[in-house]
Amino acid sequence: MPGPLPVLLLLLAGAPAARPTPPTCYSRMRALSQEITRDFNLLQVSEPSDLVFLLDDCNALEYPIPVTTVLPDRQR
Image (cartoon, rainbow, N blue to C red; front, side, top):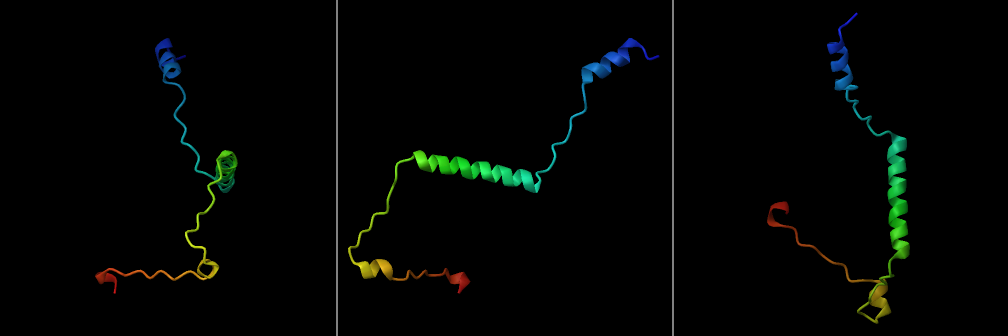
């Protein structure tokens, strides 16, 4: 029978630390679902912040002028 000291040391040491399990597909889906629900609830309680159009020209709104970007010299 072991003496009281080794038993006492085992009790004080506690259980070995368990590694956290990696996220599963279900746990990831659940976390995303909770995030979407939280964001949706925030949108519901926030004030609407409708679009502001600076043009009264309906044609310009339906067919906007395409924006061209200039590539840096090294990507040409």
